[in-house]
Length: 309
Ligand SMILES: Nc1ncnc2c1ncn2[C@@H]1O[C@H](COP(=O)(O)OP(=O)(O)O)[C@@H](O)[C@H]1O
Ligand SMILES: [Mg+2]
Image 1 (cartoon, rainbow, N blue to C red):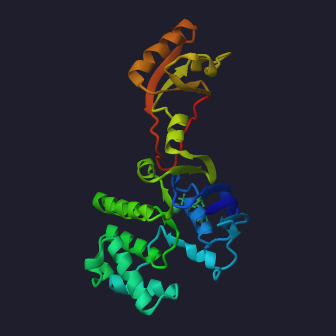
Image 2 (spheres, helix red, strand yellow):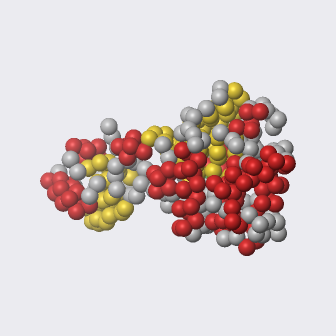
């Protein structure tokens, strides 16, 4: 359905994305997960044809979208990260404007608008000025705008940022309804729990590169570590962290400048065995602490240690 192949895009000297590749099949929901600045918006903008890549290509049903007037482009709907709505116009009038951008007018436009408003649950607010809407309602109206031309593929760029939990839920329900209708969704977020709830597959992007692309199950197998024991060793000569993988509780082990980081599922059951092993092997240490390594992103950092298979 949709194939992103080796897309690279720079802004001047800054390389925003490098060789990004992934695919989305018909009816599939792909999570594009990554921290701020990872390159999500750039990727989505290239798919939507708003930016042309320096190299690589985007194929829709096996064909490259050539121009704005290419009918393949109509298969795509974009819900941008930054909303473009007119506060002084009613919800319906905003949608009339967006419909016209797709040459939808008259009865066809009216029907598309009625359906889109109903899907996002804003039918009863259609006549109200958008300026009176909450952040969540605006997001839902933005979603409605992207649906007017009935695209098969919907690109959603962080659609829940800045919305209250109730609206977030409403947006999720809207997206679940679209999924049921067989739409292909590309859902951009930096919240793992959002990707988990909605997506069939998750593509993790960090510093402009795809670092994982798997089903949720596959990712959990690869990233089962939830806690890290951080041990400051006195000496590191000859210390081989990979030896620790022989311990059943150890999921990952890495040594960097005297700091040993050992990933375990459970801190209380993992820590004693690890410290005992260090003592038995004659490795002394001067400080031990622990960190959570959640399977999610904190803005600006991505900490993932794939398990040794
Ligand atoms: N128009 C732009 N000009 C220059 N740099 C940009 C521009 N847009 C994005 N960037 C940079 O490109 C990188 C990727 O940005 P972006 O695709 O917006 O990431 P994300 O959506 O994951 O937060 C960031 O380092 C960002 O600062
Ligand atoms: Mg972004």
